[in-house]
Image 1: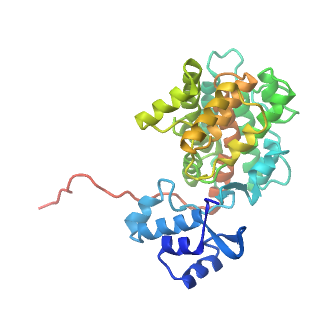
Image 2: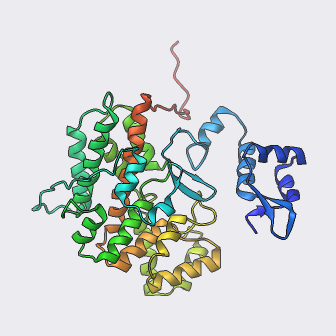
Length: 385
């Protein structure tokens, strides 16, 4: 059990006495279980111990603490929406992977928005004669919503949820899901992309798994916008703009390039090239999921992987121990279902818009402005004589 440490190993890693170790356990800071080989002994969760060691090493100086929050570090926002704990993703206390087995995006929105019933994502009507790409239409649609929407402060949660539902529906329509809006959103997308019921169910799973993931870059950006009292359209536009970066929602572009390389050469050559160059392999390994991204595992288990994806996942796992992230699962899904080229980003944006809006509504209710301070490192300040 490589993810668990014996008492001696745990005490050595922490540099503490037995009583202190027990104190950490009693406060819920270290997970514990029985040793299957020695029932009278306990094993201690290595991830929790590593986190405690990191906290201690960082010290408690204000500037160090502040810097540590900005890159996979200490929590800086209080939220009841979602969290990652012990390698699992939870939506308001419910396991997201278990939820995705049967739930629709409407069901996920009901949970994340604390709505009395699943919202109706009414279809927007982008100009059908427009020659814009689906992504451009999405930005245009949210840009218009940002420009014309009402400020969020002073409004009831029910009115905000109505706006949020219209934004999700309009975003889906902009990406191509213009169909019978009396059916669930995943079915509308499948119909718009001329896919069958099997593909529709895979789309449903993906949308639910993508609905939120704690305080991502795009969720934080949306919360900053919401904290100013801006409209929910402006919040969603901020989220979409942030998602479009290659280190966030557009990571699937780099993943797709990797698998195209595998098709041209082979998995061994592609992996060895990345390892020799020292460049991280796109789509493998996630800082918040040391034992593997459970969202990716759940989605990949729902269909047969295309052969090049299967070979690549196997080769990377064998050589590095790294497991695929949701970006790999999305790219594989697009290939498996023969979806449009930009469908991975579309699914990410539509699903995650539910999370952006949940965070925005939650932030509005706090009534506080997010305005951190910067640590100046520029030229010396000029002084008046």
